[in-house]
Image (cartoon, rainbow over all chains, first blue to last red; front, side, top):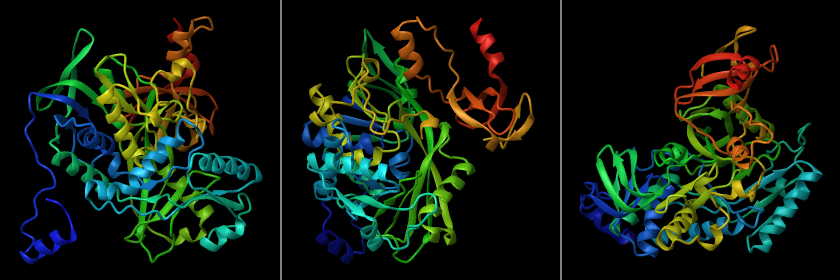
Length: 416
Length: 91
């Protein structure tokens, strides 16, 4: 069923009894052309673009929990393409362009809201670095505006401009950045993929990868063996564990990242604001809650929950930026398991095993990349060639010495 | 995570006194070759379960420790002096 104003009106007239589940719950078939491990944002987007752009519809997405139970439902919903490096910027800009047309494309309201992302700077050196990044963005055709102190004050008068240690001198603004309703992204992609024939297998955990003569034959799951011509891994924080089933050791550690939401407040913060002197970023949801987060806790974890020390640290950084936050009550906090690659950049590549494909290492920046990640991974699976904008995300770059060190920090906690 | 870590030198101390450095890996010999060093610097077992990592007792004895911690439950099983651990893994 196509969602439209007319469909709402029609179903409203008949007691809303005509709505169908957004996707089927099929039984696993014995064999698929492509099996994707991981029914999160990236896995579902990959299935969607495989079916829609590359004509491969005999696809299964295997998810151990339910759709949206992992990081796609655990992030702070920010989208942006304000990257410096040649290997990153065109990819994230492709993602931004896909976000801009996404709702029409998959016929689902993902509440894409380009309300602006502002990175604050606090010193002359940081202003220089932001100027350089802004110029690099503009050279790649991405919008960037360097704001001085007064221009920032006009947008966000309540910031602590005269903080004794980290006075705010200005900020780098990307107006096209913003937020997206994260759950709806998973649902929209799931529905769009399902409509094109993709089987979404929930509560189906991969327990092994069956191989013969250097090729993958299929996956052992809690719902039996599923054969495939090509196997694609998009397992985020559990990538190392799934890759280990195929005998691969990845340049990756799993860490916990926490996020928080406050009680609902009157309209307060228009866009997304990030602190330049510590790890803190905040936006206000349409319901009024402040959605914010900070740094990874700094130790390996698969627990999807963090420690109080980090909660305190995030609250302190937030208060250093916006003193008014001291009066705000936090409603909830939660944790997600981040696949921290060793240089802080992702991997979309083939592996030493011929028909095994890897999409991992998104660190804490995977959500904004969801559409482009799915598109480029689908491109790689369908054509065995990397999509142009994702050609730097190679698995062997660590060995070759071609690190993609956007921020010069990977999993090592003392670099954050 | 456990609130108290049993430091082998200071006894049970609050975890906030410690700094986590990361995976406790035995360092290869300088001439071990590119493959061994690549493995040491970049590749990780990244297990879900018991994991050995270097911790520094920053606000205590300032000794380096090797802490065995479960990455799924955050429970700390053991904390030993890193020098002792190093002598044993070097053998």
